[in-house]
Image 1 (cartoon, helix red, strand yellow):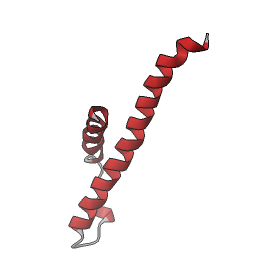
Image 2 (cartoon, rainbow, N blue to C red; image 1 turned 90 degrees about the horizontal axis):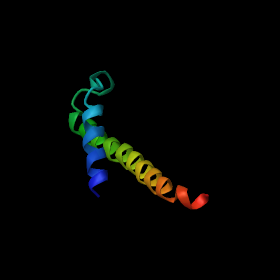
Image 3 (cartoon, rainbow, N blue to C red; image 1 turned 180 degrees about the vertical axis):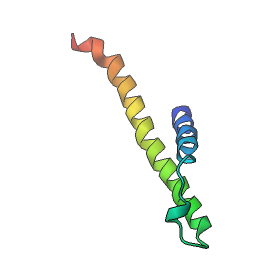
Amino acid sequence: MLVSLIFIIVTWWALQSINLEKFIKAGNVIQARVLLILLTIVIASIVSNFFLDYLLWAQQLPFLF
């Protein structure tokens, strides 16, 4: 859970650098923020699952030999 939270924070920080104003219709700021939050959760979930799987595979690597 801690790893997921860390990746959510890192992903949110990284997505703040994207200039979304040119893609947002006037008056839809709340919808754009919700989209940014959902995008953050999705990306962070994928990255944290990969990271945790990689750690698991690295721990199981000695059992191959």
